[in-house]
Length: 199
Image 1 (cartoon, rainbow, N blue to C red):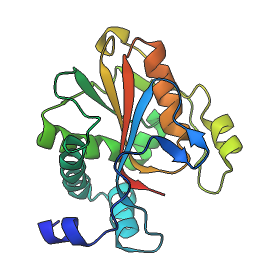
Image 2 (cartoon, rainbow, N blue to C red):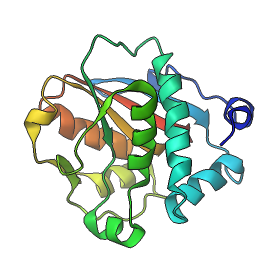
Image 3 (cartoon, helix red, strand yellow):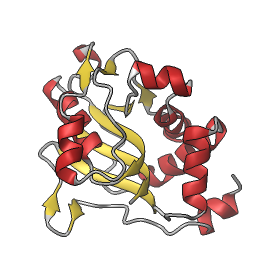
Image 4 (cartoon, rainbow, N blue to C red):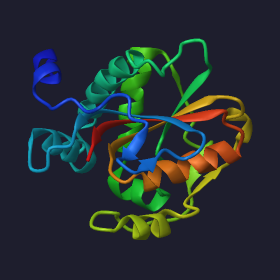
């Protein structure tokens, strides 16, 4: 992706969200939900994210991650004196085998390149529940679908660290918040959420 597209093609999201919506605060322990752009249904950004997710254009994920990382560094909540760790939202092994890769992992690799924040080992936190796609679900149904979907296998990797949960799109927050809760229970000091788009 060229720098002009990254700067001018998409609508910039609110980079310092403390609320998911006008009446929903972030859960305890989650200090930031940072999105780079607003999701454009039927637009170019959606096409890019679909190309990453379903058509193996993994380089797009890294490019988007580099842009997201640069944006994250400019956020006033992001501090360089804290020990941070990138945690891409894991896929269930069955879904990963079918797709061949985890798109959130490539976005996280891009963030790692532009920030030097380390990426967690994929075996340290896993998805143990093969959830249905969340598209079209209500918030309540999404929460039920994703409940207890993740497991930390190596808690020492996350202990006292600021974990940055990485995904492609933030919609209701059900998935990111479930993973955040799992990481906090395993000793993470706090959670930030970084996504390419905010729906």
